[in-house]
Image (cartoon, rainbow, N blue to C red; front, side, top):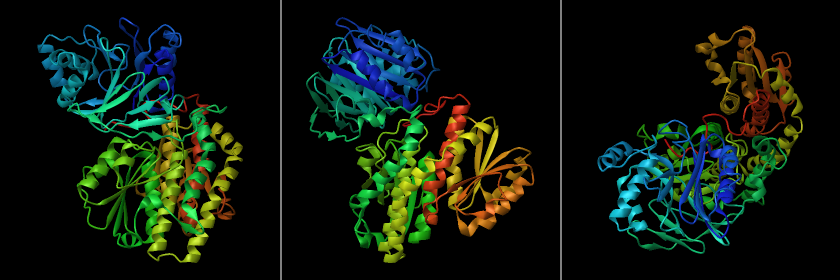
Length: 611
């Protein structure tokens, strides 16, 4: 949530800040602003609303001269969205400017103490406290920036990533972080800070990942890192191989549609390096066959759509590898005092690798001494660095808030793990493994086939874009698919939508079904056809309209659904990868029909870095 970009170099800063912030719009925000040193003063321009409002206000940055600056897109936490509460924030004499991601938990106490010392506040934000606290310590530390930043960090509680400029140190941008992501980009003729990699790809592929309580000091030609004691740190940069065009729309109307269409490639990219000569090779796993055989339990921990992939994977791991699996929302896992015994593997799944609750769950697991594996999309992210082992999904940058391609890559990564574990534990034979691999490697082409037949979904979405309530039902893996299909619809169309295990309908939910209610029934598990069809009959008899996603040649559905979308046949464990495609398209086209901002749904952010 929120986005930070900072620049110091030979070029005018403001256009670079605007460009970088535009690459971070997926993070969610309600206001935007920039602070640029113009040769004499720090000039701040900020406004409520979208980034384009700030661009128009500054004529695309042209009215803000200067080669040193920081920019921010804010998601309101403390203080309502407004011009005054937007970042950056000054100290009182406007000699220090600060941008901040995160939450300062003890800002109230700090604000009271600062007010007692004569400081005055203009905004309702916790961030302005940092600006005044920096001013206080900057003067006490005899205008030593590093010392004052260290003092501030020692006083504040919570999570933060800070970008800071001082009027009397115009050649530097400073940054520091704790539990909120921040990177440093090493460019030619200038250096940058940013919340995420896409903001700097246009200018550099070489980035440093700042750890907690590390301070970065950037100048035009140099980057230096320090700990809070002022000691110099040696850090190695990482080269980012993402295609810069992957962060552009490429002719599509929305990033979400583009990313839906990228799924055949990204799924293929996640599978191909891990299959060699009929074997599954996951080198980054780093587990011996003996360690895999010794596993007694798996905990899958995640949030949102990543959690839904875990619900699917519970069925896959238990059915294929016969390992008991618990799936937890990361925000619940942390607080239920989980029993983590020897032989447990905790798998933490996150697209960004920075999801606050998932990262905290990872740290809890590590503190209990059990093995951890991160499945993430962003190289060098916090979960990737802190997990014992990391398995990357090769989805590339995902810009739309509503995940599609990252979700699909997380699924196939877990399929590969389950197949590997099952084979090593002798739960599947060589012949069965070969059969699974054939079906797995067909998935990208089968997804392409589904995408080529989108018109039927589009027409159906047009017809039901005015729905007020939609219910998704399924059993087994189909229930897991329903969870994600429902989330896709509700988060971008704002239609009330819920997913239920189909067998639970009669325990209360069926009372909500009335004439014309749309029910989406996912029916891909052959052994459960009859059971799910009986639930479909129940809702249709009460007036529901049923839209079904089912396997090719499932003739039983012909007389039991009003609308049907067929998916290609595949192994029962892999059906989520295909059935989710028409549901992604359905959610997308409903949102388009309703005239909504598909890529930036209200109240949502891509990377949730606060609890």
